[in-house]
Length: 135
Image (tube, rainbow, N blue to C red; front, top):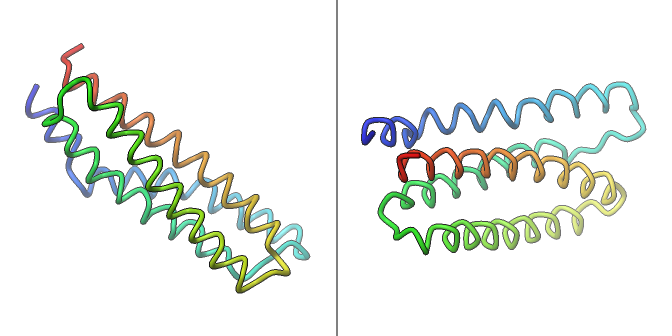
């Protein structure tokens, strides 16, 4: 069981899965922007890059889960969510203040990516909790 936990917590495996999860909305967003050229905005590459950075922050919290008591695991996950929400709002404000013409498109696209990231993180959290608890 310990080997399974260590396998799950390998950084490159996590990063590979995270990049795959971000690749789907990236490619679909690029296709949509190619079809509807008037909705194109220059800040688009910031979104997947920002999501990957936010996902990497979650990895270090995920690594601490086996060492944390069972009662505090969900608190650790919520702490991670709050930190990432604050960083996401800072990133949104920074980009929107620099490019006000495409603010709505940026915020909508960012929200779609954020939903994908949260699904990925909940899946990883549930997977590691099952491995730790042995269920």
